[in-house]
Image 1: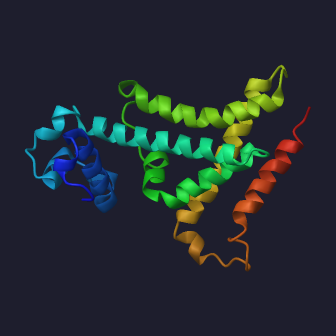
Image 2: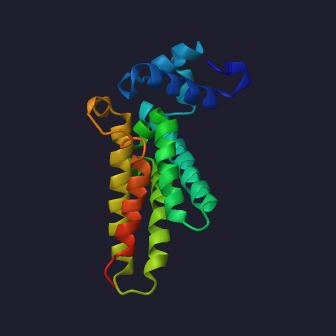
Image 3: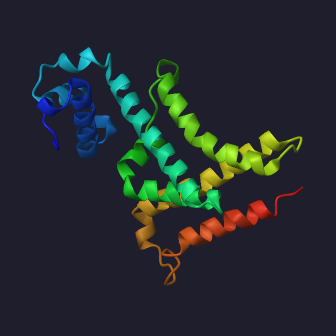
Length: 201
């Protein structure tokens, strides 16, 4: 591990060890016993901070969503003239640079949401960044909230599709013309912008 248990408190050490177990064996292979074994502590030690495996997994996922939201927010502010493009590029960059975290957020069954409100809050905030940006563009339109949410879901679905395809092995074997995959991100953002600029009034 990058840091020994002596350099971190037990809670942080458990989170770090759990991420390593997931990276090595997938989320299905995560157990409290494996975390304890990796840290060379008693099997009961991780339970001092996490009542169950699901609580440990929920905290890891919460941190992923928190980091993801920061990525989106930072990227949107970096593009002052086009915050939406910034968020889109931030979304795809996060998926590319942190594939394990991305799969945990969007490819892993959630622990019972009612038992982990902090996870739900962080996940919702990431979506709210996009929803609120679109809502501002609709102004006082009578259906502004509904339209902004429909657009947000459409954009999120498109970005998620491209991010997932980029991570898949299947796309590597699809015969694409030169430059198509390399420029897919710019094309995607251009299409999203085109749809939004032609939204019905």
